[in-house]
Length: 126
Image (tube, rainbow, N blue to C red; front, side, top):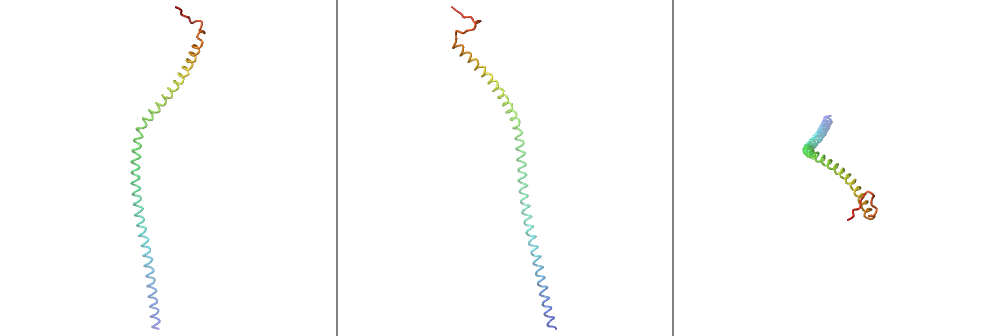
């Protein structure tokens, strides 16, 4: 009976050792997961810091561009006014061009047929 007690005690000791080893392994695995999560969190935090720097730089750049574009607004207004004037000048030129064409046509007709003068025109003779 003593021998069976020793076998039982040894079996229980092996069982407790195995359970203890299993629990230690589980805890070590959990610690490894936590270490990995900590490293991942540090890496992500570093990435977010970098993105924050980029965002700050972009904000400064956007503000600079906005201030520069404000100066262009005045020039855009001037360009619009010039375009309007050019359009008006083109309309006047078109009217004048048509008028000149009519005058040229009348002059050509007059030179081709000089004897058809109007009755109210007087012919000067020496």
